View 1: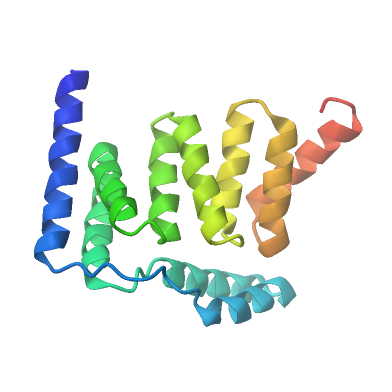
View 2 (view 1 turned 135 degrees about the vertical axis):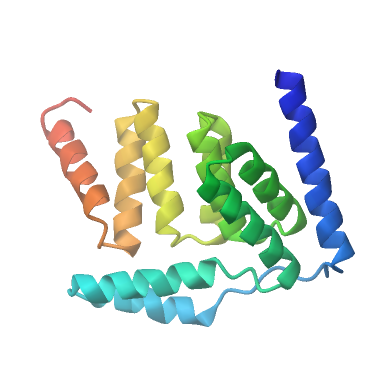
Length: 192
């Protein structure tokens, strides 16, 4: 069964790479940071309005989800459909092709990290999430993911650190705020 899954993943990866190459993928310089993000993060930290915060978050995600080339966008669209259908292995293979072809695209790494987390492959998920943060230090999704991975490993100190870093760039995440409050309470009580 495992060999069959490996063959399917290899085929999907090969097919995705062939699709991109046939579409004329252009190898280029590293993806430049989008100047709009600086302004959006300033607004996100400054706003006290939850509705405004959600609008700003959506704008940030839209920028992160734009790989800036049609070949990667085609793969991303296929991967997101596979993910939405619950086809984790297909989505993984497509996200794997994306990070292979465009290693500077942080959201490709983030989406692959998410799939790896769902598959229980925590070490690989953590490595991908750390790659995301190296490419985009303000990626509150990846920072939150690092916190969830640490929690799954019962490492409350690392979870608290990651969640606090996520809240420093996006203070409008109630579930993360609740997790931080609980972890701080545990630390005060000497449980961490």
